[in-house]
Each structure stands twice: as C-alpha cells, then as structure tokens.
Amino acid sequence: MSGAYFDNNATTPLDPRVAEAMVPWLGPRFGNPSSIHRWGQAAREAIEAARCQVAELVGADALEIVFTASGTEANNLVLETIGSGARGRVVISGLEHPSVRVAAELLAVRGFEVHSVSPGADGIVPVEAMVAALGPDTRLVALMLANNELGTLQPVAEVAAACREAGIPVLCDAVQAAGKTAVEVAALGVDYLTLGAHKFHGPLGAAALWVRKGAPLSPLLVGGSQERRRRASTENVPALVGFGLACELAGRELPERERRLGALRERFEAGLGALADVVIHCRTSPRLPHTSHVAFLGLEAESLLIRLDLAGFAVSTGSACSSGVVEPSRTLTQMGIGRHEALASLRISFGLFNTEAEVDALLPVLAREVATLRQLAPVGAHA
Image 1 (tube, rainbow, N blue to C red):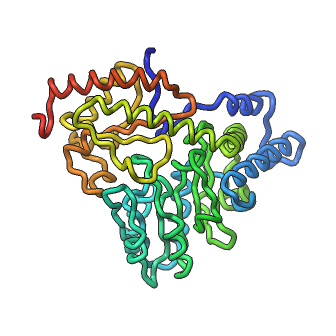
Image 2: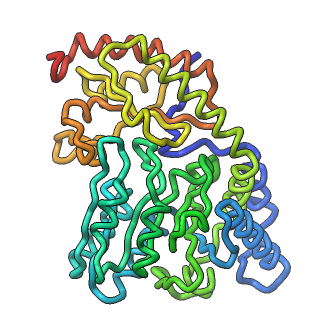
Image 3: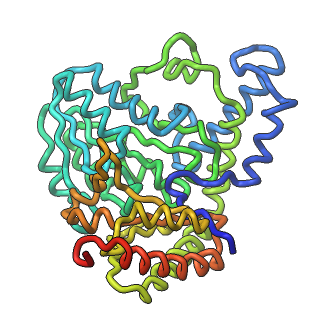
C-alpha cells in the first residue's frame, strides 16, 4: 500500500461514470448552446437536462437553478446582490467559507454593518445567538449547512424559520454538504443555496446557485442572455453535463454513500484509540459522515502533514501562513480551542474510492510519524 488520498473535503476524484458522460462533449459533440443550429441546440438540451438533475438533488424547480463556475462565485453573487441595495446589517456565522466572510467584509467597507456569530465548543452555531443578532435593518443572514473543516451540521432550518418570520433572506452554503447528506431546499426554508460538483466526485468548474422564486438576484457578469440574464457567459457544456450526472448519482446512491463513508470514518477514529493525547473534535456533534477533525497534541500539524505526504497520504490542516507565521484556523479559535491544540489539528476526509485497506494502512504510519515528531520537535505540553 503506497498511500491514499484523504483530503476529499478539498476536492474529490472524478467518478469514472461522470468522466465517461463528459468525454463526448470534449470532442465529437460540441456547439455553443446559444446557437440555433442543431449543434447548438444539442448542447442546449444537454445543459437543460443537467439543470433538471441538479434541481432534483435539492428538491427544486429547474428554473430556479443558476449555473456558475464555482461555489465562491455563487456566494459572491448573493452578497453582491445584497450590496446593491439599501445599507443595513448582514449576519453571518463564524464558520462561513471565505467566499462569504470576505465578501461580507467588503460590504462593511461600503457601509454595511456585519455581525459574525461564533460557534460553540461543539462546532455548532447556536440558534439563539443567530436570532438575537437579527434586527429590523438586517438585509441577509448567511449560515452554511456543513462546516468544511469540522464537518459539523448547522441548524439552518431553525434559523431560516426565524428569518422568514422577520422577512429576512437566508443564504445557505451547502457546497460541503451536497452529495454527502440530504439537502432539501423546502425543508431548509432558505432563499439561496450553493453547491459545487467537485465536492462529490463531479468536475471542477461547475457549480450552482439555487434562488427561491421571487428572491432578488443582481448579475455579476453581464453582456449575454445566458442563465436567463442572471449570469452572462458561454456555458461550460462538458462540466455541466458531468455536474448533472454527479447529482443524479449522488441522489440515487446517497443512503449507501452515507453508510459506507460513515463506516470508514468510524474505523479510522476507532484506530486512533492506540495513540495517546489525541482529541477528536466534535465527535458527539451532528457531522457529515466522512469528515474527521483530530488534534495530535504535542506537535505541529503542518509538519505532520508534510511527513504523511512524503509517506504517500494526503490530509489537510486549517491553519494559514501569514507573514511567515503559521496562524491557527479561525474556526477552531472561535470555538475556544487554544493555539497549541489548533495548530496540532488535521482534517481527514474520506471519499467514495477510499477503502478499509487504505484506512488500515494510514493508521500505523500516522502513529509512527506522530511519535517521531513528538520526540524530535515537541510543542506545548510536550516541549
């Protein structure tokens, strides 16, 4: 066993079935979907079929789906729509992806008040705190469905219900959740929802924004009639065809995927019992089935990541380097986790093509590298 990829929250390998569906549109089948001849109309039909597949995954009407190139673009589109209106308050959770958080910061520069609500120690944003942050001038609330670092599921439906009573629109970033757990726009009660193909074995460069009928949307890209004038640009037909099939497969196979991914995670976390000074974050919280976030106390996770990479295993950290100094994950610090523990944390995320044998191969290598780092470069309590 030479190694394995355990960074599926960053991106997933393309499902061969999805790749097979895309191949004709990378060669013999082509055409601009806006053209009226048969080549163009065949491409248009392929895109509209994909739109229906995406809509079905989240229980939506196909006409409510706006295709974008990424979840980041979709989130930015909503924040920019709010920014084009009257100034007021924007409430976001402290767990939001930078595509929401930084876009909100730009709104603050333009005169909006941005209020961020921190998660609790369980990795979940309290409903009461989100509701308490609302006011008569609140223009938008943003709460992601599943955190990309911890995998914790957020109380979107409860927050959205309170916002609906107050007439406040809600953006739900479901990029990390879609294809891994059930996502139903009606049950969530939100007004905007984003999802991206490459998080569940679809292609990069294909994503979507669901917009509730009647919810405002101001285009970022203009100059064409594509997406009913909501997003001008010639469509990426191969990627959208792949996106559509990835959604169809995810919807059809979701129960088995949840079972299998959950079993891999449980096998991994059970195997960590042989290691000392290990903290599994949010283990008792509602989580996505495939995400494990673990602190290996007494070392720096960046060093552990590099050693695992050299051994052939891909994992992730949530830390970031700023001016030559490694800073801990914002998510972890907002939860109240101390600096040493935050910097000792790794995210291990499983995908459809991981196996029990790969998990079993990772565990002894992980134990070896943790022991080596604690001896060679102890940190915190081990220093």
